[in-house]
Amino acid sequence: MIEQPNPVKQYLFEFIEKSEEKFQLLFSQTKMAEIIDDILTNCFDKVSCMANKEESIGVLITGILHYMLTNAMIPSQRKVKYYGVDLDIVIPDLKTLEKDPKKTLVIYIAKTLNKNTINENLKQLQNIQPENQNVWIVSSQDLGFENTYVIQKEKSSFSNIIYDIGEFVNVKGNNKFKILPV
Image (cartoon, rainbow, N blue to C red):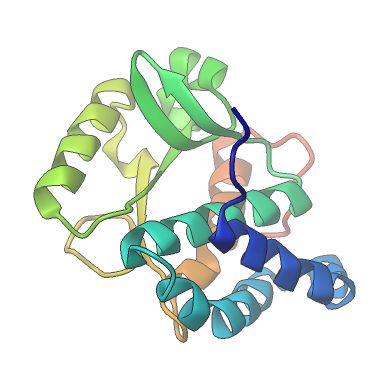
């Protein structure tokens, strides 16, 4: 069975490709928030009109994080299953989560605004990541959960997530190379 390309991913990566030279310059200057702001300013409206808004924004968030983590050289595992629970992003990896949850960050990308669904997902995540402060949520709206990054077209707290991840990695001792100067 051939998987159809996701229109959100396709749109996002076409935009990134057109902006690659500018983004590489910004990466070299560690201006991560500017890259995310640029992507959101130019992609948010179009993406939020594609199919289900929350699903589309969730795909956008996932794509942005994959692109940013790769270019920032932050070790991570994406879209993995752990004890039957789907994990969107684990930093640095499942092996570290198993050995030392204090050094592991789990990022949950909410593709719904249904608080009951989010609560259920958070309970599952907290069963495998007992360090609640190391479970971060990314959503299109602030739903009152701790450690939430809100993605919006402008003035998005999500814009700072790569700096915060870099700080977490550097402070928790998972990053031998101190990739991001935080």
